[in-house]
Image (cartoon, rainbow, N blue to C red; front, side, top):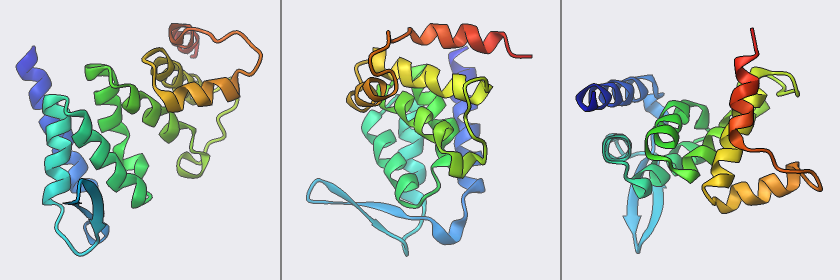
Length: 164
C-alpha cells in the first residue's frame, strides 16, 4: 500500500510539472535564509521541492513550493499537492491552502454559495486547519463564524455526502 502511495505521488508530481506553463516557471533561490524567485531559472528546484514535500512530508519544501505558485498567481495548479499534504501528512498549512484555493472565485469561476459542494469542501479544509491549530485558519474562522458556534470539520463531510 505504501509503495502504491509513493507511485501515485510521483505520478501526480510529474503531471503537475508537465501541466505548468514552462515560460512562466520560477525557480526558488535561497539567499540569507529567505526565498527569492527568479523567472529566468529552470523549474528543477521547484520540482524537487514538490517531490520532497509529497514523498517525505517536508512541510518547509511544501511551503516554499506553494510560495512559488502563489507569487506566480497559479495557486489553482497546486491544489492536488495541497490536498495530498493535507490528507496524507495532516499539514495544517496545506489544509488552509486548500481552503484558499477552493474559495478563490476568480480562479474557480464559481461563487461558493451556502449550498454548493465546493463551499462545503472548502469549509471542511478551513475547519480542519483550525482544528490543527493553524493561525491563519483561526483568524479566518473567527471572522467567518463571528459570534456563532464553530462546527467540527467532520460536519462538512456529512453535508457533502448529502449532495447528489
